Length: 177
Image 1: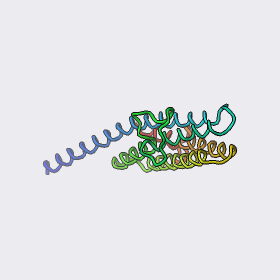
Image 2 (image 1 turned 30 degrees about the vertical axis):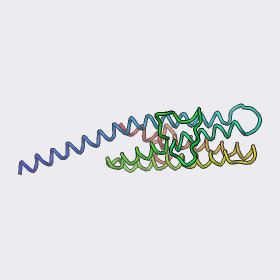
Image 3 (image 1 turned 60 degrees about the vertical axis):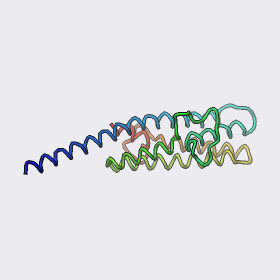
Image 4 (image 1 turned 120 degrees about the vertical axis):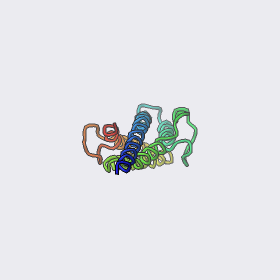
């Protein structure tokens, strides 16, 4: 009987250590994801800031956004000086790995829900950025760039909410400790 209790105690200790370790690793990765998302938002903002006439400026920066989000193994990756840093693999692959790790550590449903929302908005931002790059008119280029920027802001989420639906990455950052 005592032997069984000792085995159970040892297993629970190992499992709780794994969960804490998975959470600690995920927390470090989440900080990296936050930095990458903030950079992508800035890149999207720059794409719509004051620039030279035409749509080339916006398209170049929207391609950089696509590169930052999909990573160098993404289907639309084009090496761009202002895009992905060498040590980064892209925000979508990073967040997918974080979500997988947290699921395996039995994270709360709200964390998974917030990451689902974050990933959804980032995927939509990629689509809008790609449409901006492919657009035929300045108005269409800028419209899609605005939508991409808005989707990135939505992926970051509202910092003050306690809802995983509108909190997205901000919610996860606050709740993974």
